[in-house]
Image 1 (spheres, rainbow, N blue to C red):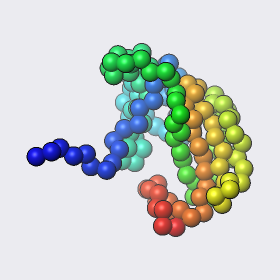
Image 2: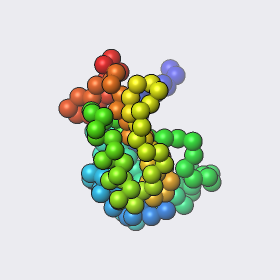
Image 3: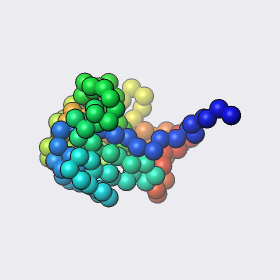
Length: 142
């Protein structure tokens, strides 16, 4: 029998210079760590875990040198358009960098980007065609 992966994601791991600094940044945005040691912080995300792993330890564990944040963006969708700009401002206040201010998107929504202290990009977006339930799950059927 061939092993198959279920179509799901368990963790998103970001390589970071200082896990404690990253925890402070993400907690300033409203996240809450469930576990922390010198090399890793685990933050539950409603069925998914965000892992902030010291870059050097992540490289050693993976057995390769990683170049740093690459061409990947994490995304947080809001329930309303007027939630985008305050979240971008909170990220900057917490130590992030504004990459793109919130603006009307050609696909009909509103979005902007920030980078966390290690350069990982986050899109903050409102998509009027999607809905988000009370647990934060996105539905693409409107």
